[in-house]
Image (cartoon, rainbow, N blue to C red; front, side, top):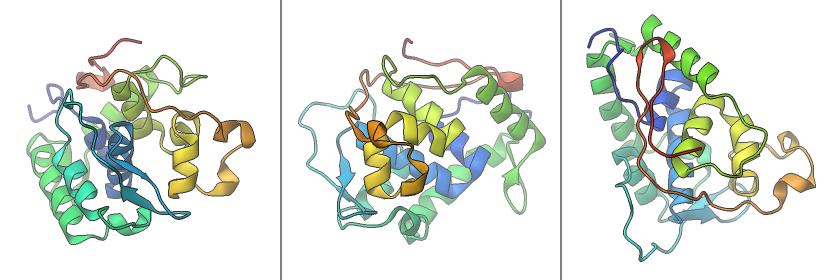
Length: 203
C-alpha cells in the first residue's frame, strides 16, 4: 500500500494532495453547499444554513463537519483554513495519506506517486462542457481536480457570492444564472494506480 495504488481517495483528499489545505477546505465547502447545509451570506462570506430534514445518503467527512461548525457564524473562505479546528481536521486527514506513502515526512508534501496519481485523475476526468447530468460526487471530484475552473462551471453563483472565486474570473452574466445544487447524492470513492479512477455515481 506504500505506493498508493490501492488507496481509496475522497475528493477533499485529492484536493489536499493536488493543491493543499485551502483546496481541500474548498471542496468541503462545496460538499456542504450541495447538501444544502451552507449558503452565501454577505458578499464574500459563507454561513451555515438550515439543515435538510431528509437523511443524508452518506455522512460528511470530518473536515466538512469542522467547516460546518465554523460556519455557524459567517466567515470568508480564506479565513477557514486558519481556524484551529479546521487545521486539526486537515492534520488528521494527512495521517492516513502519509501512511499510504502519498505524503512525505517531515514536511508532508505530496510524494511523486501522489502527484502522478492526481495528474492521472485529471486526465481521466477532464472538465466537461456542461454541469448538467453530473452527480454530486462527480462535481466534487471535478472541483478537487480542476479548482476554480470547475467552480465557475459547476456552482458559479455560489462560488462568486461566497468568495470562492474572484469576480473578474467569472466569465459573463450567463454563468450567474441557474446554479442548481447537484443531483444524485450517492457515495463516491476514487481509486486506482497510475492515475486510474473508480467511483460511484453514473454520468
